[in-house]
Length: 95
Image 1: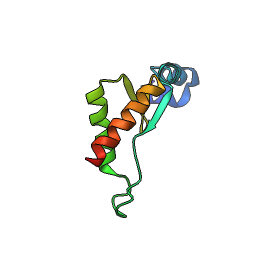
Image 2: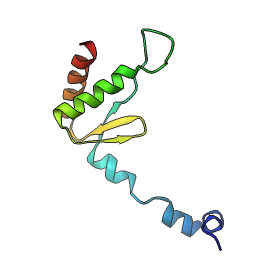
Image 3: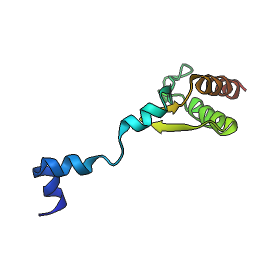
């Protein structure tokens, strides 16, 4: 039996091999989420502001904060780290 058929027909096999990591491990250690996208208020296209994403990445790189990227968001261990990144990203964005 092929692996494809095992996933389709054998529920135990699919449940055992579908997830390699537990999502509770990520969300338990990094509970504070920052949205990676922000609406572009200056024009209609593109819908998401490209500069905001790069400002967040630059702020994280400069502050060297532990983080995880999950589903369009950045997760941090503490709310202080999240606040520091937002403050630094706003400084980079407005410059």
